[in-house]
Amino acid sequence: QSALTQPRSVSGSPGQSVTISCTGTSSDVGGYYYVSWYQQHPGKVPKLTIYDVSKRPSGVPDRFSGSKSGNTASLTISGLQAEDEADYFCWSYAGGYSYVFGTGTKVTVL
Amino acid sequence: EVQLLESGGGLVQPGGTLRLSCEVSGLSFSHYSMTWVRQAPGQALECVSSISGSGHSTYYADSVKGRFTISRDNSKSALYLEMKSLRADDTAMYYCAKWSTAIDYWGQGALVTVSS
View 1: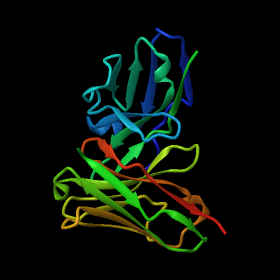
View 2 (view 1 turned 180 degrees about the horizontal axis):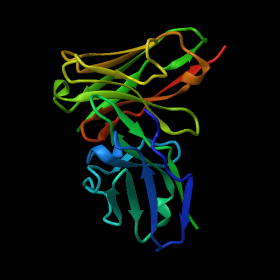
View 3 (view 1 turned 180 degrees about the vertical axis):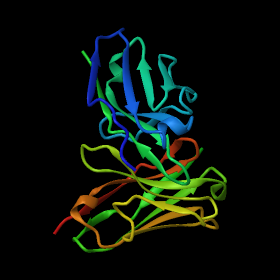
View 4 (view 1 turned 45 degrees about the horizontal axis):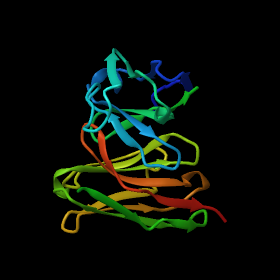
């Protein structure tokens, strides 16, 4: 499985919106509605932020939203806050007992 | 509360063997697929291996196929990863995790360093 493609970095000022793309193939992102996103602060364990393309786990602020079109999924952070500065990884089910992560995106709050 | 606790990490020489363990509590362990995820320093997350709830089905990343073996003991709510012929590029933090349509629970990680 090849890693899903994400931009290396995105940035925005507090209060702005940023969107991170995650591009795969019809064998992963395009083939299933099982795309999730993970937030990881330095030295910390990844945290589930979005699952099943657009669902938010309990406790995740509603400024985080997800979507998918074809082979590309997206994570949007609206009303960017300082604590949102972190690395973000997408994840897609890929059939059987396999899955694949994205290459990771560093979000910087200016 | 769901908890996953890895153990067995450490420093090993190239070509050596290491066995990671993960003790799971707070859920019906045998009902869920489990997985090992690794992250080399400053790098992306990578699926290493996955196993079904029964243990009968497994998956391995190409980079570890033939060298790593995943297993589980449902009577002990434990997950294992036997790693042989270790290489420098296997150096990473190894996370035990529960997954279904997403990875929803993670352990704190076990650091594996392969170096002479």
